[in-house]
Length: 355
Image: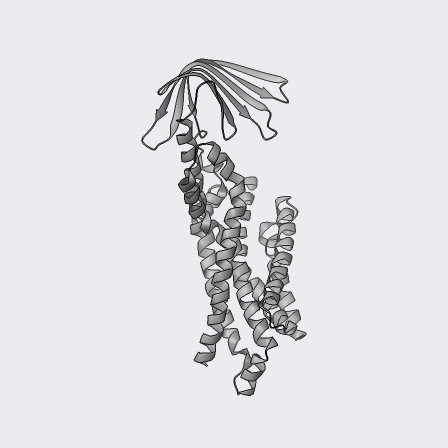
């Protein structure tokens, strides 16, 4: 029995780790296009980009591991079924369902790791990535050239003259989501400052700030003698930070704190349930995957991989639909986010009866 278990697990883990490695690479490359160009423009080098890639690996686990897990088991089972190895095991007097113990155990371990990752590793990863990106943008500002338009995030800078940390004739433009000017700042002079936490700010002097609202129709002008401008934006308060950067333990504390605020508590509750639901994805998908792969009986691993990708695609499509229903307040997070998983489990029992 132990020999058979080792034989099956060896094949599963070889496929699982190979698929995980490939999928992490695809995930990171896909995300690279979102920020690499901006970071390079901000002065980031190869090792800066590489560091951000490495910091982002834990945040990819929630999508990569369930897919790799399903591919590993379905590719293994479809080959065993097609080559009649399951029948051979049964003929030797061994209960053919013995391998379900291995599947069940690996499923529980994988779900446990995903729940831990979603609660601690991924939030820490997201926070570290955000801090590293801000650091790169800040350091890139130190290389700003006079009489040149330089873009940093949503801001465009133009400096008439630069003398080490001292700047003169400073123009700062902030664009909104539609790439229209939201705020303009002009100052006669300024000085670049760097605190002990490596945060870079500019002390602007003798200037004016102009804010535009409603497509440049409403204008607000504010004159100032001194104004401290943060290159990476102001430090956000806790309630303004992205929920993805908080641990699940912290989210529960925030939920308790904001119980009376229905809107905030709903958003926090949605994030919490999303983490738990996605952490249990292997458990939801393994049952329909196992019985469907056994029925197909094709020795090619690519077939098992295809079945896995099909089930994952169906699951995430349904999850996206119900997630939108929750966001639009049609369903509550406690109900809407769990329906896709329950559906896949029911689908698994259906395939089992049809076996």
